[in-house]
Length: 165
Image (cartoon, rainbow, N blue to C red; front, side, top):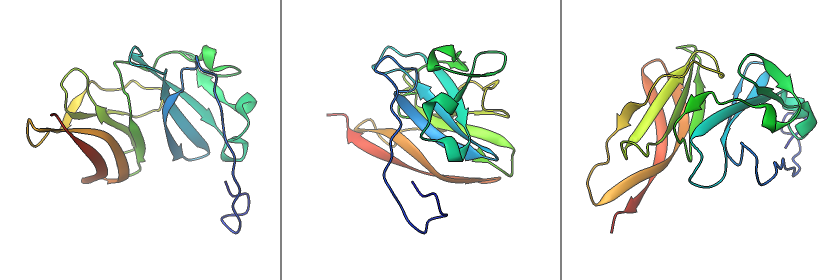
C-alpha cells in the first residue's frame, strides 16, 4: 500500500474471519470508493455480496460498509445481503466508465463456460449470466478470468486453461 501516491510502498493486509462472506473476492475502484465483491469459502457459496470503503480506510475493517439489501450499513460483514444468486468463484469485476456499468466475469458452474454479468450499480440489479467465451475445446477448461481493461467496444482479460484430462 502507498500513502504518498506511489513514492514509497509498505505491506498491509485485510483479514476477514473464516466464516466471512468475503473470503473469495474481487476489488474494483470507482469514484470515491473501493468496492469488494465477495463470496464465502468452499464450493457451497451460491451468493455474492458487496462492501465498500474509502481508499484511505482500506486496511480498517471497522470502516467498511456492506450492502444490506436496502442501504449501505457500517459494521460487520454479516450485515451484507446477497446482490446476486449463483456461484461466482474466482470472479473479476471492473467498472466500465464508457458504459457506466459494473461488469463481472467468472467461470459458470451452470454452463461450464466463461460468462459475465453487468449492473449499473455495485449493489445491482445484476443481469443474468451472458456467455463471454466458450472453451476452445473439450480438452481444456478456461477458468480464473481477470479483467485487464474495459471500454465501450472492448473487454480485455486473461484466463487460465487447464487440461480436462
